[in-house]
Image (cartoon, rainbow, N blue to C red; front, top):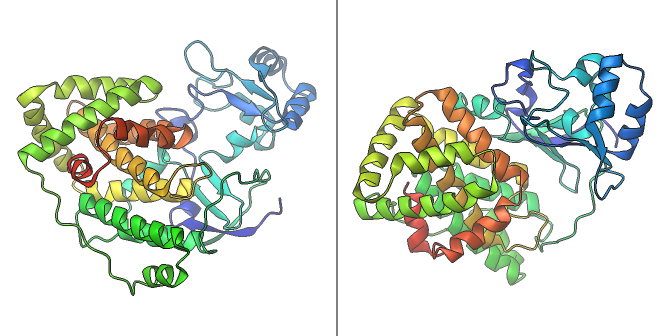
Length: 389
């Protein structure tokens, strides 16, 4: 892959810097680190210290079903730490051999470099440095061209294709603009995004390029949903749905297990749950007065990172929207439940980074929509309840 090509990036991207040894949760914790065949055989013969050679020989294993891109991996230790993780927080391989000897995932993370027809680059919210940066970012995220200088692997061929009339990136940025429309509350913007996605979905299904052009040029006026009712009944129903959803998804992820368990225990059940929710919501608003702006950034960054709603999988656009609603509800539930008893901005950042380890790096989006559907939360009335959290 040629270097110095222009990529569309969020405005924070050029300023991103790894926290190195100062991370509270290292990015390698709990995950196997995969190596390509080329990287694996290069490491087998690389000159290094005796101690590093013993670590490499004991830690690297061939994958069960090796491919040229995922040929071998370093498995975490019994405590979830990477064997290369030093007491000072730095990587032993990086410190002794240099960045060029790291696997592609370690060299690039948390950057997501998309080398398809629309070249894009952004950073995953699962790296705690990213939510920290976004927490101090007040203006809506903007996007600009920037030269990306990483040595990139070739992008795998796309398996699933959507009819987008050649305007995929334009559609995605148009959808993002609705979530950034601060004339409305964030829950109301989420509903507006759903209206916009439905309208685009109809135009694409009908191959109506004139209608699509009218939407993207804002000549077609969308219906703006009414304000989300945050009354007692709505909040109670939304809280119950979030609790049920989290109890299902929590079992699938080590990263959010402790946060989910604590949040579920904090809220409890019945009328006490609603009273505790109101108390937690007030505390969170006092802790992070700009919480709506922060969640807007996190959601927008997630949408851009995964190329919402045209991910490479056989899922309908409305299922992708349901998954995004699940992201919002789960974030809000975890943030309120955890910071109620751990009231610090660092604790809030840690919750978000842990949640996006599940959201951005698993099949979360694929099972979130079916989960909401099984719960009966896939219609507008129930989505309003979920989004009023």
